[in-house]
Length: 341
Length: 200
Picture (cartoon, rainbow over the protein chains, first blue to last red):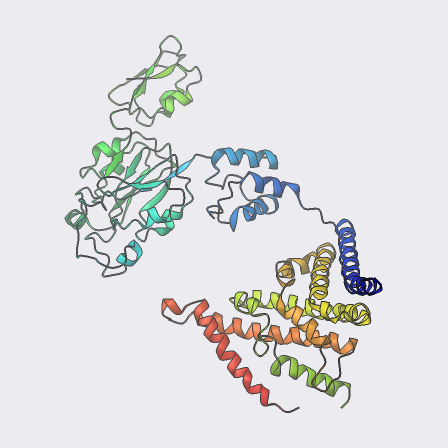
């Protein structure tokens, strides 16, 4: 009885004292830290936290900042534009704008577009048989790449591997297809392509030059796997009603800020190097003579001068000239113009 | 040997002979992780000096008046970790409030150091008896913490300087980055082994 009491007491003090000392230490530090947290509290701008919560959290770096929280910080403190988040799109831009109390600005969703029509299983001209690592970057560094065209798609799908949203897939011919609904325009594929064939283009643009070759016309034609290279003839540039196309170094480029989707260049191109997504589905504009007040705003706005008429008289549209760009519909103050098949 | 003579001996010992990284193998994680760029290595080094000095002072007091007084030396590791973690947290709050510029340059590194084994190591070595049986007093323990931090920073900066130059070397891909970093660390440790022969 006595022995057990002594034993219990000695064990008790052996365990109790350290436990009490450590416990008191922990408690004291805890209280000090809690008081310090209150006392040394620093106000962090709550908008940073709000914006971080709204951002998609993909940390893709498409905005040029180090991750989503870095972008949130830049928006609040460095006045970065609110519409830089490509994966978030217009919705997130609007949310951020509301938090920051500014206008979202226009944010047209962009998507990746390939400026090359080659690179599939059947439509590629091979210069030699490449058996190395299955990567465009590696293939491109050996003797200028295995495909005959120095500027063309090699087809080892570095862009597909780089896409973290699964927006790029292969069709039956091994050509890369971009799913515009999934594409967030983060730019990962643009960086991955060693041939710099990919460009981020506003999704409402329908006309694309499917070539990046800087070779002279005959040379480009000789090596192109599809036979549809840009030969730099400049016909498209002359046809373009809004001067959106420039030819430099044997290659035509579309300025997507100016392009009105008329598709005249695509029909004029002798090598069919220009892809027109709206081909065949374009409508023609028609003026309702009842509503038209003859203000002539549409006639001034028309890029192809298809609209004619006396001032204060109902105007009419020359169906032959009209390219269906729809600019007049936007400009008409009386909403008198409609698209007709 | 006067005060400054002793200080000199301690400095040479802490920086070269018993360098924390290269001869005691403590704090290897930041040594390999934060030595890619000179300026971030410098920030990390300054933070380590700062925390080591403070931690040495505080853990020495805790040890002397709480643990040794109650015969609880075996609780050192636990008590020191608790003390260092709380201390770093507290210091972080204070400088965030009072010195935002310092917080911006040190801030990222401070939480990393909380559980750095070099900081715990210096705290434990400070209260461990020396080979001649004596122990440090408060002043020397704090100085030892400071000088050990200087030694750590010195080696970290040397490593970062070498690695920045190695970036430009045409190395096989498999040797780039961490692999060459480890070989470099081993080579530097071998070089510092030579200081063991110093008689002071």
